[in-house]
Amino acid sequence: MGKDLFGNKIEKKIDIAEEELRNYDNNSFEERLKRLKAINQNYPFGQLIFGSDESSRIFEEAIHSYIFGQYITTIILAQAFIERRFQEYFHIRLDDKRAKYTLDKFIKEFKGTGFLPDFLIGKIDKIRLKRNPFVHHRMPLQKDTLQARAFNLGIHSDKLLQNDAKDAIDVMFEMVQRRIL
Image 1 (cartoon, rainbow, N blue to C red):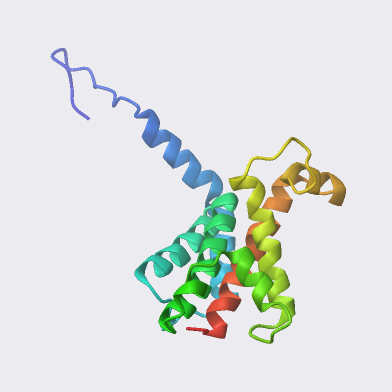
Image 2: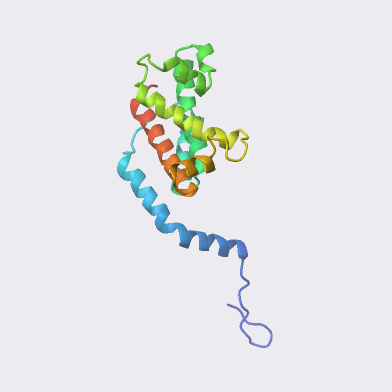
């Protein structure tokens, strides 16, 4: 610290943005660390093949969003990754028609075919349905909104959202482990 013309210490001005970020880091560190350890323990990292650069970045950002507690972002990005996984599968096989499908169309086409187990197709559809109220407007308390689901399940919406994000990450990792590309 410097001194002014009279020899008094000049107090460092508080940078509010820096203080806010330090408070966030301190207050959320343990929870972030717990989520990171769970990711590292449950999902071995290594030489994973993701497809395009965009898919790889979506995958990484979904994981980081989950670790940082950005659960809506996690759900949206995980669903985007899963959809791209299917699109890239068909793009590689020069099936341009199916490479343009949306996730809903993939789900309808694959159910009961053995392409992926139906239990996994069902999980993918649940991720899609949980994502929809965040990207498509819903009326308050419409049956698929977070608040309505939380009320019907008797769980706090924050906990439900965290569970939904964890489910989305689980399915995203399942898609990578199946290596359909």
